[in-house]
Each structure stands twice: as structure tokens, then as C-alpha cells.
Length: 529
Image (cartoon, rainbow, N blue to C red; front, side):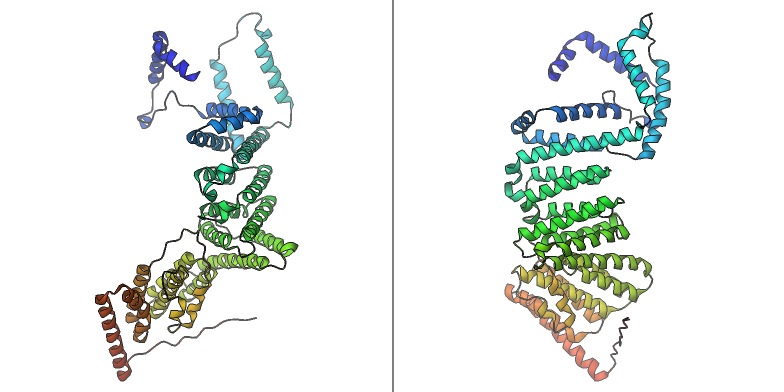
């Protein structure tokens, strides 16, 4: 018993004296001045000791009876279960495959370490020293390793990493099999479900062999099939995390891993379609688009490998006979097309940073590709507005902000929070109908829009309309604001709004009579062929 051993050490004066002597011995070593205050603790395990303890844990997990392990889980409290998963994650991290070069460096460094250690090891004295069974066993082991040509350090480390990963995966699947009821609590929106999924996703976040990843993909397919509500109902956090890691694997250097990742993503979208009873894949569509936008900055996706994965997904959609006469194949192709547009525009934007017109045109195509994701579309519309302001194109900047206002109004209307949608802005610009293409998902954690958000955005529009001398539009842009304050019966703000409209009409009359206002004339040139 570890607690009993600790008590016996504390109660025995001789033991405590010996411990104090050891501590004094540790303190006698000279330390560099740069390390004062950062000295290593005498009771802290080093890397080799940690791996040794984790190896013991993994050996127990591999050989213990399933009934005993399940019985322990059922008796354990929540914190103990959490600690158990933390140990599994430590196993994956400490036994991850670091690559051939790293292992070769460690092996060359280890030889020097063994040589130095041999100078300090006690000499086995006596005529029967060579007959020592432990020594003979070590010699036989060393001889067998030296004679074997196939047991290189790289192979040993790779096999060990794979064996550890598969052992952890087996334990995970056993836990999931016996805790389905607990994992389904609150439709899968619980801390235990998040902990299990985080452990699964850790396989993708650290370096793994291709063989290991093949088993991880298979395990995740089974996991998604067992718990679809956790991904396609309620909050979208779990769905977003999984989409991010799968898409990252679509850019993997191994072609087999790319294919497995593309197959898993297609399977995930199909499960979403089945979960909604053939209605749509809105949840997975939105989360994939968001993940792509994050990966562009994080991992630099978009090369030939990622494009090949998108082609594999399209091939799956074309060859799926049971869903051929449903909207599913078209939705998958629409999603992959939007992803390609995003990747292409992002790459071209770097080439045309000093060309304002080309840069804005690319940002516009990028905003259109995000039409289904309100927050991301708003981000790119705001970027367009900033470019226009920087170049002095205030009228164009005002139009960008009007599109953002129409986007917010449409979002509020779909949530029954406001009576006017994008159609209220059609009298200003017919292009605002693009804002009606958004896809709503109640589980997304986007910034919740309110009437005050809409009012602030419309006030920004009015400011730029004044600066660009587009006085005729001020009355139309203020109509939604008037509707908000009429509902609130805020007569002070209403009087200010009507006075502002009065001033705009006076300004229109003035510039029409003076004929001093000149607008720009624009031509759009497009190439077809």
C-alpha cells in the first residue's frame, strides 16, 4: 500500500535521516548561475522513468480482464475517470513516433551515455561472477540484438509507438461500449463525451503511423454512427473539432491517409444527411467551411494533396447509388466547390496585395463562397470595406456596410426577432439578395445578433453615405432603424432620425439645383473563353 509505505517512512527516524542525507547530497552538486531558482526537484521523474511507469500501466491495460476493468470504471468517481483518460493521453504523447532522424540522434547519444555509465558501475567481483544468471541473461540478450539485422532502433520505436496507440484505442472502444448511456446524456452534450472525443482526436494531433491512423479512422466511423446526436444536434463544438482534424488529415503526406480522411468526411456528411431524415447537411456544411478558413491560416492547406482529397469526396458522392436521387450529391458538390473557391481566392490574394481592384474582387468572391456562413461572410465584407476606405472609395465602402446590415436583418428575421429581412434593402441595391443565401444552424456558436447590433451597423452606413454624398439613400437606410424605435416608442431617437432625413432631403435639393455633384462611372470587364 503506497499510503502505508509513506507513513512508515515518516515514522522511522533512521529512514528520515537517510532521506535527509540524500537530499543534502543532491544539494551539494554545483549548479550553473543561470539555473538558480530553476533547479530540478529530486522527486521529479525523468523521461525514462515516466515511460517505464506508463509501460507498466499499458501492460496492465493489455492483460487485465475486461470484466475487472469495467467493474473499476463503474465504481470510479468522475474525477478518477478523468484522471484515467489523462493517463491514456500521456501514453500517446510519451510514446509518439518522433521520426527516423530523431531516433538516430538519440541512439548515437545513448552510446556515449552508456560508456560513461559503465565507468561508474560497480565491478562484479568473485570467481563466479560470469556464472551470475542475471549477467548471463543480459549477455544473451545483447548478443541476440546485435546479431539481428532487422531490429534497428527506428523499427523498435515505431513498433512500440504503434502498439501503444492500438492498446489505448482498444481501451477507448471498451469504455465507449460499456458507457453508452452515460455518453448519451443531454443528447451527447456532456463532459464525458467531450473527454472521450478529445482523446480520439489526440491521435490526429500527434505523429502516428499510417497503420495506426487506419484503425483510428475505423474507430471514429463507429463512434459517429453510435452517437450522431452529439454531432448533429445541440451545440456544434464537437462537430467543429472533428471536422477540423479530419480536414487536416486530408492534407496528409500519405495517400492512404488522405483517402481514409476523405472517406471519413464523406461518411460524416452522409450521417448528417440521414440524421436530418434527408433534409440537408447544414451542420457539417457550416463546420467544414469554418474549419477550412481556420486551416488556411494554421496549416496552409490548399495544395495538390488537399485538392485530391476533395476529388475523392466528389467521387464518393457520384458513386453512392442509394442516394443518387436525393439532394445529397448536389450538396456535397456545392460544398467542395465552395472550398475550392476559398482556396483559390486566398492564394491569389497574396499575389495581388498591391492591386486594390483585383484584391477587392478576390475578397468579393471569397465573401460569396462564405454566403452560407454569416460570421465569415461578414468578416470578408468588412475587409472589403476597409480596402475601399483606404483607397478613398467611400461609396463602395458604404455598400459593403449595407450588405452587412442586410445580413444581420435577415438573421434576425429568421429567428423571429425582427420583421424586416434582406428584402427591405432591395430599394437601395438589388445585390443584397445575396444575403438571403445564408444557412441557419441553431447549434452554431456565432455572435448572437440583436436589434441594437443592426442599429449600430445602419448608423455606420448612414455615416458613410453622408461622406460619399449619397444623400438619396439615407431615408431608405433609416427605415429599419425607425421600425426599431417605433416599437420601443423612443420618441427622442425618432425625432433625431426624422431630422437627419430632413437634412438629407435638403442636401439633395441643394446639389440637384447647383449641379455640383459628380459621380464616378464604372465599367466591369470580364473575360470569357
